[in-house]
Image (tube, rainbow, N blue to C red):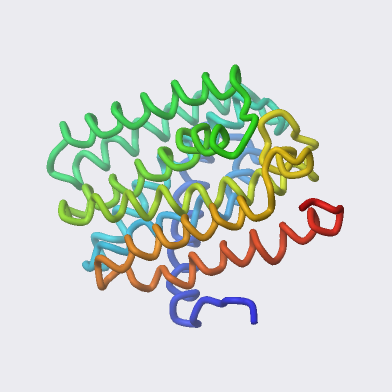
Length: 275
């Protein structure tokens, strides 16, 4: 049976997603974004809902909503930066650059205020985005040739990226004891997302060099190795969520991504004869 979120959890998640969509689209529209760009940010559902998962450690509902709202501005800013670098959306590059910067600076101001420790927010962002940015540059030059190399690359643009926002969520939610498990969950979850993206992009976009789907089809990575990686990531995510009672509702979220990789995406490769 396919895993499913409870009705109550789904409803709460969709409330967060809707509020985040309203905030981001209103911001983009009010600050020079074209209707096409507004529609683009309205459609990036995972980016709008992931702050709900990352703020599970915050027990005060009003504070949690404020933190999710600040996080989504920065997460969408980074999505626009990614769109700008990939140059594959057809959107105006000046709009992407300007709105990326504006969203980021607004989010930074809000996160500093929420945390009560602006220096800690800035230090965390500088540290983590040093890893993300240098990793992005390296992965374009040094494409993965096996699973170990793929994991090293994914640790920068997948794990470190989402891990940063997990840690920021706990910091801005004034839950310093939750920074470690929040980061650990987000890193494991972020890597599961990256696996799903790679397996999808191999077929949808024709990605090859360094792509996990390509490594599978070429025999550089085996199905058993991929299943083992997914199992380890799921265990890490569940262990981290289990450290805080407030975050244990994340278990079905992890199960959904595990199912997506193993039972929706992987069978297409198995049908093609991948071993």
